Image (cartoon, rainbow, N blue to C red; front, side, top):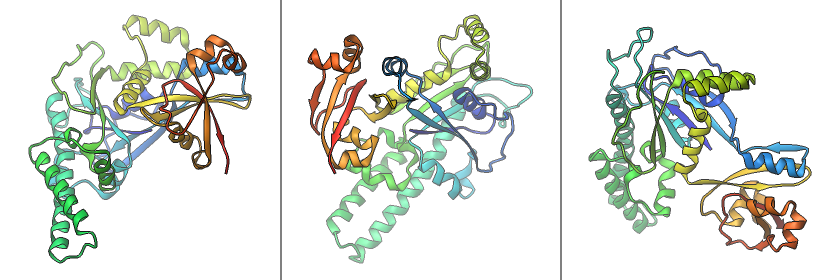
Amino acid sequence: MKLGIIGLPSAGKTTIFNALTKGNAPTGQSMGGRFDVLTAVVDVQDERVDILSAMFKPKKTTYARITYTDVAGLQKGANESGGLSGELLNHLSGLDGFVQVVRAFESAVVPHPDGSVDAVRDLADLDMEFLLNDMGVVERRIQKLQEGLARNAFADKKAAQAELTLFEAINAALSEERPLREFPLTDEQEKSLRGFGLLTLKPKVVIFNIGDDQDEITLDYKHKLTVVTNLRGKLEMELAQLSAEGDEESLAMFMEEYGVAELSLDRVIRLSYDLMGLQSFFTVGEDEVRAWTVQTGATAVEAAGVIHTDLMKGFIRAETVAYADLIAAGSLPAARTAGKLRQEGKTYIMQDGDVINVKFNL
């Protein structure tokens, strides 16, 4: 999963990036609208991986991973001055979702570019930039389809007309300032739109970046594929850096002092998994214990494809045991003896925590 940390200048994107990645990238440096990206890959900490690793004592233990990118270059009014740059759009289009940082903290050292802190305004401003971008993409596609249909340029006129109908409908939604996350799409329609880089289709976690002593912001901002949370960005960054240094004693002391129940990295990952409908499954053995990520509702053959395309092509069956049943049994042979190790076919729906061994033949 690849998530982009986005926000208007001085929102604290890099601070949140450091908090989520245990990094130490310089903060407080405005890129002045220039496109730039910082990237970090982080492990998804999962106690189940640790327990399985202790059970199997493998040569290697691998957690699931998330890639975070800190994206600079977004500015209010971009669509009034030529639109988002092609470089920026290409990067944003390739992301699975967004972590949108909204400034809610006051700072005399880093004044707000608009002269005042207004989280509701800033949230709406960036939403509008993405919405205007999508309207431009959709209107250009509508024009191309209309012109092509008028010239009988499409071999499959029926499919082109269906596409035009869809684009006219989503254009109407955008004109009403509704993000496309709100628009009802079939799976087939959603797949057909993926190549257009429509930004308001992507799920997002909205983070209000508040000060250390500031109350959390509550806002009626309910949209599909959207979740809202508050983080004390500067504090969370400092805690993450203590964690990276291995100073567990100081980390525990400061977390207790400030009432922080879990690090922001773990919190945002959990929100992201829930938001995007993801779950974990595991492969185990002497060589490696590994966590994998798959969509909720994925089949056994789709899970096999996540591991390797050859496993998907030659899939025969998956030996499967629930994590809880394996732990209760104490070993795979004991789970087999207890009747908990099952033989599942291609259409089996994976459950969170399944431990599988794929049988295949090429």
